[in-house]
Amino acid sequence: MRFKRLRLAGFKSFVDPTELRIEDGLTGVVGPNGCGKSNLLEAIRWVMGESSPKSLRGGGMEDVIFAGTQSRPSRDFADVTLQLDNDDRTAPAQFNDGDQIEVTRRIERGLGSAYRINGKDVRQKDVQLLFADAATGAHSPALVSQGRIGAIIAAKPQERRAMLEEAAGIAGLHVRRKDAEQR
Ligand code: ATP
Ligand code: MG
Image (tube, rainbow, N blue to C red; front, top):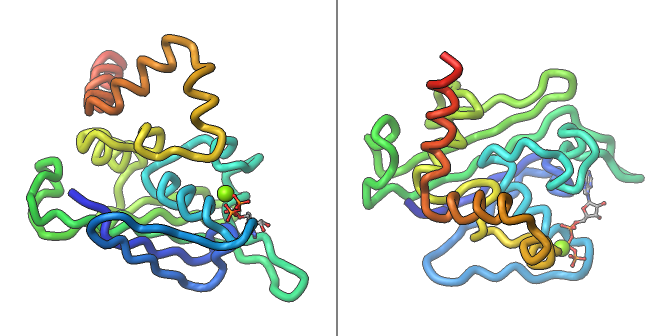
C-alpha cells in the first residue's frame, strides 16, 4: 500500500477543498511560517485515526475544524480523505479487493467523528487496524512531527516499546488481544 492522494476540506487552515498528490519518490511541501505545512501532516495522522487532540495541537477534537478568520466565517465540519494505492494487494484481507482504498474521516460540531473505508461506514478501530497491519498509523515513527525527535529521546522505555511495536506492524495484534480479553 502507498499513499496516493490527500483531500481536505474545512480541516484547520485548509477551509477550501484542497488536494495533494503524493507521487513516487520524495514529495516536498515548502512555504512560509504558518502556511499550513504541519497541518497537512496532521491531516494524515487525523484520518488514520488519531484520537488525541493534544497531539494535533488542539484542546478538543473539534479544534481541527476551520475556526474562521477576519474575512471568513468558521465551518461546522471537516473532511479528510486519504487515497491509498493498493496495486500490490498488500491491504488486510477485508479491504483487499481493489487497486485503491479510500479512507475518509469527517467531524461535525457536536456530532463527533465518523469514518468510512471505500464509502462504507466503519469504526475508528477498523481504520486504526488497517494502518497498524500495514505497519503504520497515526503514531508511526514514520511521521515525524515538529518536536517529535526530542520527545522520542525523552520517552519512557514503555513508550519507546510501543513505537517499536508499531514500526514492526504488531500493534494491531495487541488491540485484538485486548478486544478478545474483554469479551
Ligand atoms: P511553521 O513553518 O512555522 O512550522 P507551518 O507551515 O507548519 O508553519 P502550520 O502550523 O501547519 O504552519 O499552520 C498554522 C496555521 O494554521 C496558523 O495560521 C493557524 O492559525 C492555522 N490554523 C490552525 N488551526 C486552525 C483552525 N482550526 N482554523 C483555522 N486556522 C487554523
Ligand atoms: Mg510546522
